[in-house]
Image (cartoon, rainbow, N blue to C red; front, top):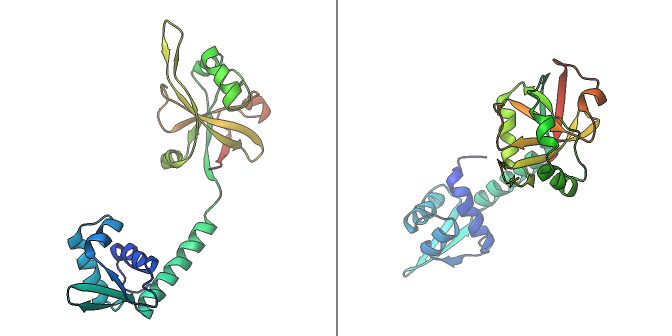
Length: 222
């Protein structure tokens, strides 16, 4: 990439979509501004800067503006497409978290056995989990922030007439590359964000032969 500014890429792409690769196309800076979600003044400035950079040719016929993308401008878009295509295709197909097993507070067994949750688990994830969660302290706190971008299975809040219980979000996961499970995020928990909880049909500690302090990896598929 040469000196094409980031804020001009979308403008150049919009011009390409309007047929400006081989021909001069008539545009208005007000309509262009709406397309790139900028003001008319900003769109006008983009056109001038793109022309000054040699990325487009500009033609004024009276008050009518026409533009055409130069070979330099088109080459920049082709290179950007190549870079983005490689980056998107080479990104890993999953999010991998790593940490250590820690002892829980005993809350998991209670909450996982509540009918308001178990009925939803049966329908939404296909099974009723073992009454308990596997708690994992993450090595890197920022790992958990990636979950905000993923689709999840929502377990709705409910009330038993005496108390209201919060929502939960489930993400399909694999523990240590072999054990299928769900990572569960609870609306109400005593854990901070550095701790994640896993649920499964079976007791994950026994299935994975895990002890407090065991190093584990968790893969979450988007």
